[in-house]
Amino acid sequence: MVSVPQKVELKFDIGEHAANYDDMAKSEHLSAIELEVRKLVDIVRDIRSQQQYLREREVSFRDISDSTNSSVMWWSFLQTIVLIGSGAWQVYQLKTIFNAKKWD
Image (tube, rainbow, N blue to C red; front, top):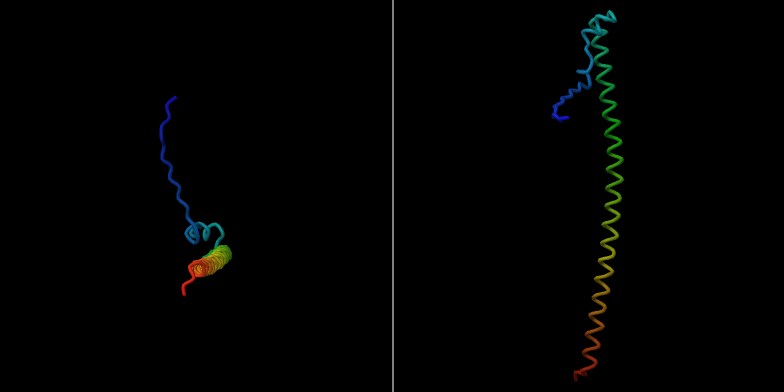
């Protein structure tokens, strides 16, 4: 059995372009004003859906930003502790050296 590669194309229409309003007007016997109102309702529905999606993404990004901010804060705190400890150790070592040699 021979495998033959095949190409598949998918086309998605979303939003106001997804509905065929001419067919809808004929099948539901809509006037021009009713058809325009239907289009506007669909547009508003799409906008609200996109707005909800963006709000969910904003919450997710906010959580990630807060987590990153917390990690950076703790890392900076740890670096400060190490820096202070290193400075104190160096001062102690210098005192020990100078006291051992008794520089008079």
